[in-house]
Length: 97
Image (tube, rainbow, N blue to C red; front, top):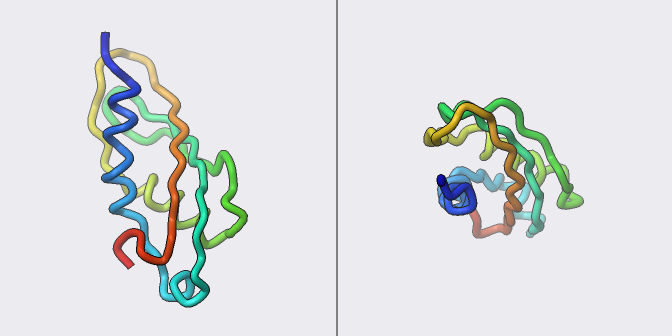
């Protein structure tokens, strides 16, 4: 049986590396956690992504959502799509800036 919890955990670091922290976010010292809900099909294609729980900052929410949308996901076994909810914490020292 495929371990989807391990698969989801393996996505955290690569997605976090795709987070873009803008100059404005750095100047405002914004930080927070946005939970992003997204669905993948077995080929790793992103079916949808949306904000499940806002950080309270539109800049943080958009940055987290953008990272999920830019990620190239590995495939997984099976024929059905899977939905994941991933909290993404962003601070001025996160991501590619």
